[in-house]
Length: 259
Length: 351
Image (cartoon, chains in turn brown, blue):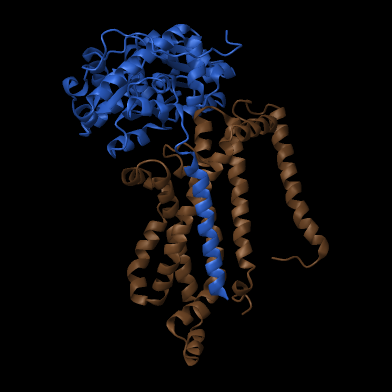
């Protein structure tokens, strides 16, 4: 969303920074006044030290790579399978009637509930974590794609028919451009979901990952490292979202908005 | 136009995953001559076994054995850290973990459910503590009537022992309000007075003591001398297929325990990176007082475990009786236990 006035662009950069500074000040005040015990509510200074420690040992980078690998793999699998399934169901009324309740059912299950089965089927390590992230993101992607396809005005298809479009052309020239904006918005929400699930997914006896680092810090009674993990997870979440927003700026994707 | 966009994005994602995969698995680091690989070349491939543990001092000998096995020529033991017992149980049931430390009543519960596991050794003696709030006037459990008391699990021996102590002191089961809570959360909950007391394996009790938010009401040894909370459990499949590995494991755990008894400060230093806990806290548990936890006399006796079993039946966490004959396997315990051959310098500043 572009700002109209030049100054509001500066504001857009400045205002979030101000909020961050206020939050930091509040945090620092609370810890300086010892409202909560230091061992449970770490000060910004100890968290900063923890950050340096984690960075220098290389653990932070290692955890970051592990989490990104799991989340991006799980999420990509969900998108790669979910969008085609959604497209197909969007066009096939009877299949949709048959499968929609099941998809809705699975969408409502918390990924946490799948943990015992994930361990049973995939053991421990990367694969069960990827599976949990997949389970969290696949069904929302399918549902969003179905909804997007259903909302395409039928006049588009009639026009395409008049032009004699073949089915692949119909897909790439009409359906995909028409659903792109809606699907990308859904992907943003789902990517956020996938990133949230990483903490739960990496509970499964991982050896690394940001989610694991958070659990591990808690087990190790290290609230400073816990806060480091939380901060990094939050920042990466924002970065992923910004990247997906970039997708929307692609000219051909904007087509959907211009209607 | 859009088609090429999709192709570009898809290509970008594939490359991204490939790069992350490379960074994650670092294929170029394989074949770099590590000490272990050199040992493998010298002695042929060594047997290898993963052993599960949680970062509690009850499981201290597990990472010590891992450390000792790096340089030995016998089986290589990789200690695999878990964060909770349900995951341990599910991993064992799924057949992906054949040896692990776990709370004794949980091992009995698994046996009751038909999972063929055996207790081959104990993890420790003592090493659990009942904590109350710093300013609490409580002198015994009678003073905790109507209070909230946290336990790690209904399947923990801590819960069973507290139930027995309540019985001894004439406190009825419903007079204390028990809550199950992950051990790491207990010191915090006590500090903010969300709970009034807790009973847990170290170092989660020492943490409250060091923070100044709690005081010791009972050490485990005060209420139940030579208290057992965790045991070493192996799957019968492992005993059948690789008995020599189980023998190595039990000997390794026994010798690690003897070493830790003689080198408490060094042990604290050795395990704190495995636990990823502050060395100070672990050192405190191992030295204040030195008999807070013990790693000797770890042969499981029928009487000890039968007693835990009977308390479990009484508390209703076990439904069917488990035969001690089926549960315990003592054939792998070595006759003489020497300290493990480990060289670690104690940290400076250790008292």
